[in-house]
Structures are given as structure tokens and as C-alpha cells.
Image 1 (cartoon, rainbow, N blue to C red):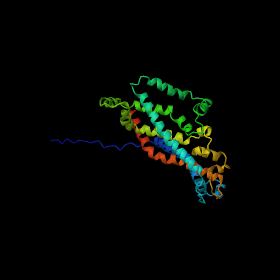
Image 2: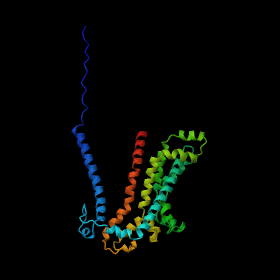
Image 3: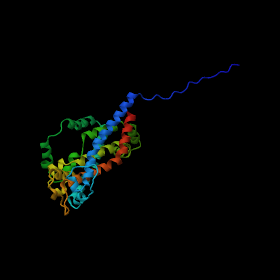
Image 4: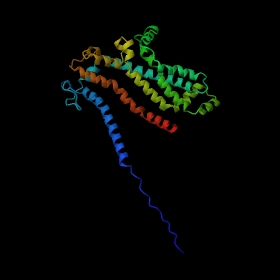
Length: 302
């Protein structure tokens, strides 16, 4: 009886990418790494310069300080202006972001709801402002004269409370959610507000966190509204304080400090920049997981 022998073909190892693909990948990594380094170096020089002694700053910027000093930070933190401006910035950012996210999400929910009759008309009015923004003169007259908000924190809160671009992003996200969730909740007797806050809001945390960061950056970095409408220095945000220090390096009396230690204006400017951008840099890692989740959901649905 002849033996039936089964000849198995040897498994070939997976083919390696050819040299051209490896070269393209290597070039891409080198380009991205060089670009990231190009963006990082200015921040690093500002950070190191803020801890550099006055005698070394006048000799130019260095990658590492040869003489470490905290005089610029002591000079800043001994004054009252930093704390007053910091409180204003934190209050404006927290209150403005909370109100803006709530307002934008409620509008986006209505614009994405298939049973809202005039949702396309409302969306058109909002998106129309992206194409034809208002003029500066009318904007100033509206806030300063008609609403009488000069020297009021509302002058920095209200103008940024709604963004057409952010509402567009959130509306697009809400339209990807299955409407069967709303129908099932309606059958159980839930009204629209309960559906929105108990069902739609929890499953929309990725886009809500993304929009919240956009609004927080907008409020935190805003100095233009303070420049136009806020005359009282006690109500200036940190960005306005930074602008006044950088635009006039001799205007250090604005900080209301009692420090007697001589410091260079450059050191004070650099330390002001670090204090101003620090909170945003520390905030991003806590929201990064929402960005990754949002991109993953978008990729799966796409």
C-alpha cells in the first residue's frame, strides 16, 4: 500500500518593506522630529531664560543656565498684579468655558435633532457669521455703548460665549449618534432635557472635552477684549498684563511689587510668559485621552 505523503509548502517569512518605503518612512520621522524640535526650542529658551541670572541674560540665550536665579519670579510674585490678573483669567476661563460648552452643546443638539422644524434655518444664521464677520466699529459700539459693559468682566465673557465653528463640530458629532436612543427614552417618559443631560451628554464626552479645550484656550489667550473694554488694571487678565510688560519693558511699576532686588526687564518678561502659558500646558495631558478616543470613534464611524 503506497503511502500518501502530504507535501506542505514552507511558510515564507513576511516580505520586508522595500528600501524606498523605508527611506520614505525614515525621512518622514526625521522631518516630524526636526519640526517638533524646531517648535520646542523657543519654549525651552524662554523657560531657561526665566531662571537665568541678570548677568547672564545680557550675554544672550543659552540652552542651559550657567547661573541659576529665581529673582524674576520673586519680583513677579511679590506684586499684587499677578494674583489679581491670575484670578481674573481663571474666573473668565472657567466661567466662560462652562457657559460656552453648555450653550454650544444645547444649540448643536437642537440643530442635529430631526424633529426640530427650523433647525436648518438656525444653522444657516449661525454659519453665516463665519462667512461675514462683524466689523470692529460695530462690535465696539455694541459692547461699549449699547450693552454698557465697559470695565465689566462680562465684556470679556459674552463676546466669546458662542463659536460657529465649535457648534458646527458638535452638530456633526451629534448627527452620528443613533436617534433610537432618543426614541427609547421618550417611550420611557423622559423629556428632552433629561434625554440631553442623562443620555446624550455622557456619551458625547470626547467632543465636549475637545470643544471645552478650544473655548478654554480662546478665553485664556484673549487680551484684545481687555485692551478695548477694560481700563481698570485690577481687572486685567494675565494676557493683558503680559502684553503691557512686553510692549513697555520699563513699565514694571504696573506689577505693584515691593521687591528691592534689581532684576532685568527681559527676565521679568520671560517669567511672565512662563506663568501665562503654564496652566494650559499642564491642562492638556488630562484631556489628551479624550482626543484619542474622539479620533478613534471618528475613524470607526468613518
